[in-house]
Image (cartoon, rainbow, N blue to C red; front, side):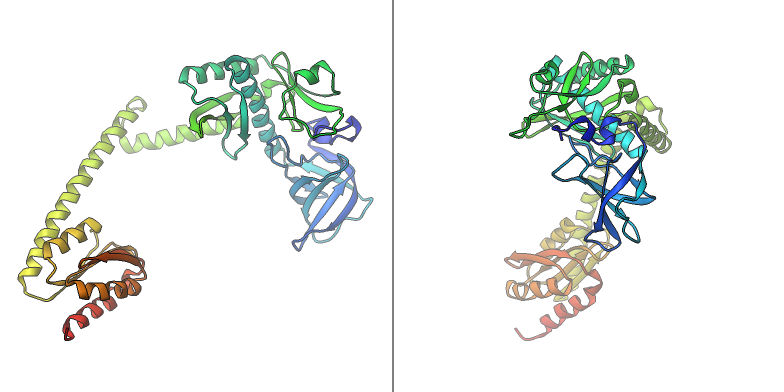
Length: 405
């Protein structure tokens, strides 16, 4: 990605703002998938991935480009996978067009990563150990155990000051020994590369070996927002967004806030306190319901035992495993019982009663209910996936108690 003569560099690397390009088809052969072809052009405006930046999308002669990848060889040897009814003839001149919305987004995020990493290293001795350009937000991993909020805020302010100043961001080709090359950061170069090398420089801030597409001035980033920091395997991951993504995230956050305000009917400044109050009330209500269900289970078991029936089968749509366990514990181990809970096909079940019967019937009931379970000492419990088969399970239970032991 770095060892390129200027004349052989890709058009998208010479000018990242180039949206269309006229090229010549050098080769076109069928891809593995039917209806797709692999095309090599004399040059391309479509970036083939590198430096953490995903590949571009676009069109070649009006045909959708589904992927772009680099292969070993000259810079122009980039393979474009297209969807087309037939092959493109060698020597044919074609118009190549980039999906500019996707490219512009990648340029903003990739350039922002360079800036954030540079300021973090310069001002806070935080070295970048990796980064990822995601679809909605991106992140950078730094070699520090934690980052306090004040550092995150100061880092963001410094980056945005450079954005407002429209600090230039320029790609250059340099050789080993060039002062710019000596200042450039990189993860090491493969053996045998002699240059020239592509260096992307943020004026007065940073120089970095990079093959990706970048903005020409930081004002094109519009704004950078450091979203949050989190520990990750002894390091720190900072999530961020830049450019148009900041506006989209802000719009989505405002829409969510307004929707929550309509539900909770409180002003924005009271949303956190009101949400905490609602969650606390929810936990109290859940505990009360659990206590009520336990009392109901005990009363229902007492009434069932009082009937003198040797078998009890009960389904409680609003019950859970705790309800079933309380019920069979209150019922005792003299009565054979099957308790199921849940409103859909899935839910817990418990078989309880004489140990010999339960050890034999439990696995059968689990199979009928398409579930799994286990147990010992007169109780077998598990999770069912076919509650609609409860009738068949009840039949097995009742038949078992009627048979001579």
